[in-house]
Amino acid sequence: MGSERPLNGDSVALNRRYLDHLLVEGRIVGSVHPDTTARYFGQTFNTPVITAALSHLKPSMTAFAEGAKAADALCCIGMGSCEELRQVLATGAKVVKIVKPYADPNEILTRLACAEQYGALAVGMDVEHAVNIRDDRDSVVVGMQMKLPTLEELKRYVSATRLPFIVKGALSAKDALTCKALGCAGVVLSHHNGLMRWAVPPAMMVKETRAAVGQDFLIIVDGGIQDGFDAFKVLALGADAVSVGRPLIEPLEQGGPEAMAGVIREMTDELRAMMVRTCSKDLKHIDPAVIHPISW
Image (cartoon, rainbow, N blue to C red; front, side, top):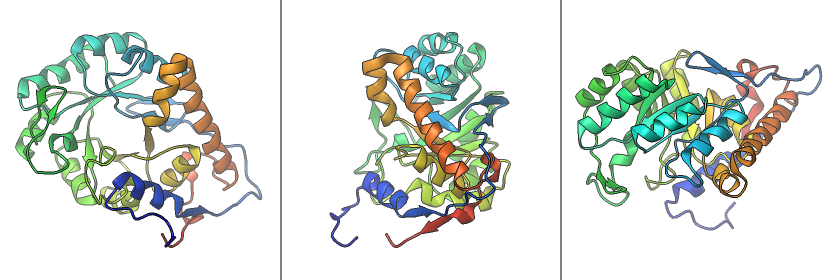
């Protein structure tokens, strides 16, 4: 791989390089057609491919939710008003509301309360979006000031709702253990598509994080998942779900909810093909030993 272009700290490129260095051992003899159903927050879904917590999409966030519902996939949404969240939940989609780390605590508490009132499955906070990529000052997102929450503040937000709470932006076993101690139900291993330069690929941290937090803690991997083959590798490493964003945007904009749902279904079909070729009868029986890293 010495002839490949220098990475120069590009964390998105590092993600891709890492996933491409994981090879898969075939185990077809005695295999059966697999079951891809997954269960999150008390609900069963057809796939462990879930949507990334996107915001401000065209034609609308309700269309985004409709696409997830059509694919029977968990839908995560990001920045937006309580009214938008109400409209999204009115589609019947099963939704996790990820709240930005606003500097004003009332902006956070209001959105957590709306999520609980309108019937979201879970809530969370996008903590890594509080810090700029080039310095350590709190960032401004769509005109709203962000603030990196202290542990005490984060604990307050976790305790402010009866819904399960997840943290997006953890990128280490240490972060995951801290979140578990605060009462969180899980983490999204993520660097927000490159907000941190030279970041370790989220998939690379799955095995260490799983070993640290145990089996009763949700681990979602976000960043660079392009297809069901990537999804299989990450699930084999020990993740519970994979979060997909960019591959859904253009189909949603050009073909609407059904086109977006088609992408999730196609990724699930690719995942199923990898499962049958590795004798993985369901998501709980993917043997991590089928993954063989090569030099990257």
